[in-house]
Length: 129
Image 1 (cartoon, rainbow, N blue to C red):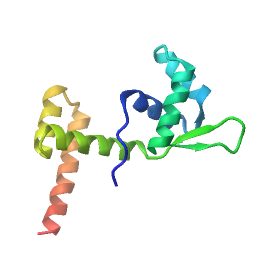
Image 2 (cartoon, helix red, strand yellow; image 1 turned 60 degrees about the horizontal axis):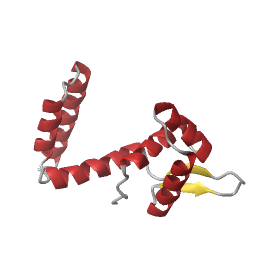
Image 3 (cartoon, rainbow, N blue to C red; image 1 turned 45 degrees about the vertical axis):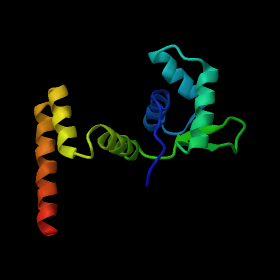
């Protein structure tokens, strides 16, 4: 399932919705405005566009509309990574991972989690041979 690719501004709104859960325009605006100056009408317009794109759902059963992310954070991240993988790395997971590890030093905890994931992937590959 391909989900629509969010813009940077849309991702900022999605991050608020993933963190807070269903929220009004005012609630999203207040959280975003703490980080950087943003207009209320800008947030409203982005949420309207995101509803049309299928990134958020709008509950308009009450006077104040409440918005929620249509897709989980993990599913959205997977879609973004898949797009980046296809466009920038020719579909090569190895190239993507190598660049990610070369770009920013991974913590020992991250490296342990990566090793665990690799072992799990290798075990799955053994079953399918």
